Image 1 (cartoon, rainbow, N blue to C red):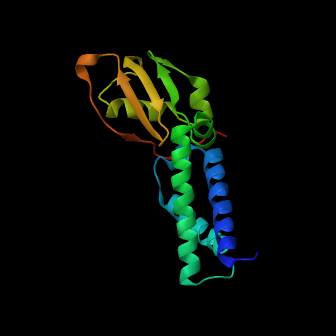
Image 2: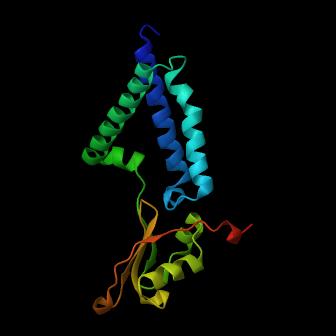
Image 3: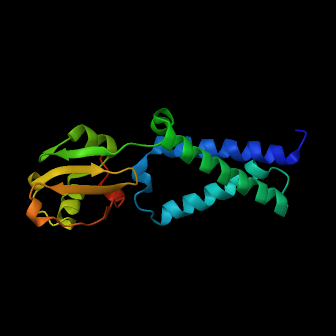
Length: 171
């Protein structure tokens, strides 16, 4: 390329879009609660894409240009997703309804790999004894499970983070 800094900007943008697509494919449940393996993965990914962004330029200016390019594209993406529905639909996930008026959506639960035990735990953390007491249960875009009770007099506000319990995986 003619200008090494334009090369860094191009590489940084390519890595940004790759990571955005990868996170979109692997889903919001992967972000709900980071465990040790998730933190290691993030650190290794950041290390593996560093050279892809800056190429042979490991100077301070090269790193700063790459960081600036990432901040600028992130700012632009946020503005676009707020302004244009199509950009929002392509880049951001949607909340998923898990329970509506006490009825479980088994297709959504299966697709998202959310167990019955996880739902019961979330309900208990919201002060509910039975899943049938739930008016609306949603997996939010940040991976949290929010619950609205049928009983408006006994509302309890909590923040339930999904835990990745891999020993309960179905084969």
